[in-house]
Length: 78
Image 1 (cartoon, rainbow, N blue to C red):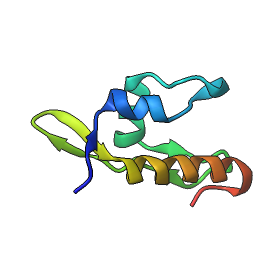
Image 2: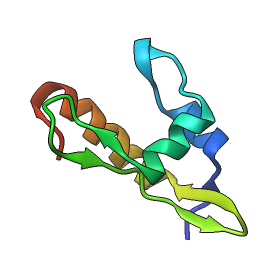
Image 3: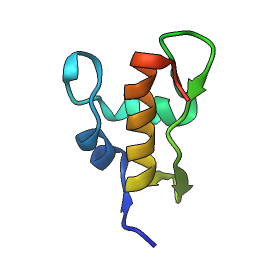
Image 4: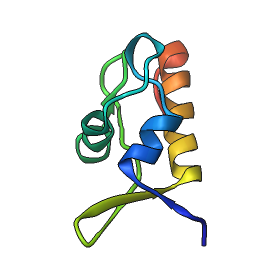
């Protein structure tokens, strides 16, 4: 099993608007509500598990979400 990342750890690996690091609440929102693709329609969620009230995710889940967002900006998500 991989080392699990917290919201703060994931925020360090991701980029938000303007290339800045997203706030941890933004990362939580991507988990609970997802990221709506610029082309409309599809919503991509950051996979995570909740353990004792803390959101945790694997690095590969964060990487997959980042790729989906990056490609979503160019071709639509998915």
